[in-house]
Image 1 (cartoon, rainbow, N blue to C red):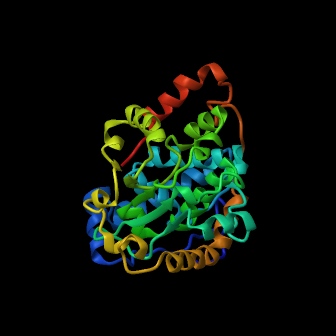
Image 2 (spheres, rainbow, N blue to C red):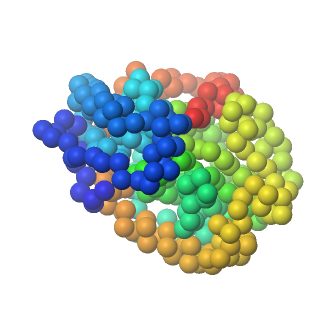
Length: 324
């Protein structure tokens, strides 16, 4: 990818694409996603034709790395991938305070990254999966808001999602909850929870393979039990709650973690390396703000929901979360 992003939804010509990853990713793509050269070429052609003819989409990336985010997440189902893109474009516009201006040069966002709250680790695991590490206690709830928390997660994911290795092999999230404080929960409003549930439902193009929560404090147990209870069985089987790091390391290769957790690369160096990556991809991430879809009630099916719908809506949204 270059830093020059074309947002013309129907350009005269599309940039050529070649699959340049190691063979293990090609084999994985074939086995898990039904992807081969013909499938990929035909799917990209159909996807681009759909975007060009879409009456509500005004500006959109149509380069292969971007569209393959959706095609690979949906295992090359054109109807499912197009539906996901439509919702992805919609939620970005409806909730700009969460998804726009994902700028690593923003002093607050940079401070959250520097704190060690969220960053990607340098090495992939043996399956080629990218590991995203979080230390929940590093998020300063007296200084930052829930909107900034969501922006950090959005910025990190947008900076990573053009990586084809991750599109194919997926992601692992590892969270150290040992320093989690109750203020972390208090920054969320009921409306935030409702709207976020609508956003994450079938709109984020990423293959989420495992979520590990380590040393969750007792005050958060009931919340974690509730969340697990409303997840689909498939997603629930990808969530692991560990009492401590000894237990967690039976599921996670400790050599891949920061040095402070048993790995080889100090956390400060992990953060510095990832921050450099965020800086390099800054222009690409910010260019997403120029994408545009016309918003109306048909594209925002939850527009008329009321507070009376929150309880059933949140649970329903969790139940409908799709995983590959």
